[in-house]
Length: 350
Image (cartoon, rainbow, N blue to C red; front, side, top):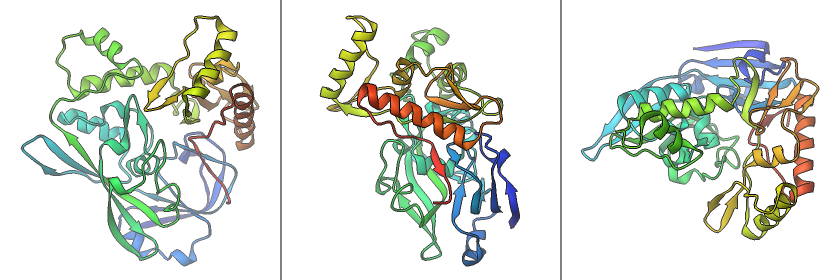
């Protein structure tokens, strides 16, 4: 069934809490609704939205916002080696999937616990946290092809996954709508603990020799996230606002030199090796430039985690957020020669 709302208030449909509207909002409860929808009659542009957690509406949206409410979840295959294929439709809340899989004893996505949003968006964005990315476990992405008006299955390896990106965000953006994702999980214990303090937190809570379950790792990940990230139900935000830049080692050496001028000769810059390159936390650079807690209008760089911009007053406008974003980008580029790119998708008329 397709439910349509004209001149629809999107305030409750985006976790940033931006007070914006769209010309038409269409809620689709069945995948077959994609076939019966009269695409030519829809106000344009058309934007397909998940849980509204990784986006910033830059103003009132003049076209159509579509949401797939389909939320079936099932195990479609298992083998004797412990591999489990789980198929989740696009409207499944991603953290509900993490909770369900962890409760079943399936490993693979427990490190992604508490990331807001829905399954469909996870495959578009290639969400990631604590050393795991969605692409690591995506077997197949199920899509609706707007060009041929048919359903297709695309192997995860063919989706052009990179750091917080995929072909669904670039060249496929206006063609394919993700209707579901099949994840390859495992019943064989395979905890991933060597990122972002997860191992230390696990050992502190359960002991060094504990026999872990996915639910135990999930619980620790949730506690880490809750300690430093705002609850979007309380403070509006779109999650991590900027991508962590990956730079050359030569460039990193220059950043170390700058940091030691500011913090002393023995100062260690936080970083992660990525092959021959280096990933530098954007949050660290933002903090070093003095932005932690800074406000502009109703927008604020979150004091506990400067990678996040929040709607601190509940009345921030898109222009407040965009202006604060611009100030951060300009300062980082001036000091470190790095041009930060937003992870949050900006949704507007164009």
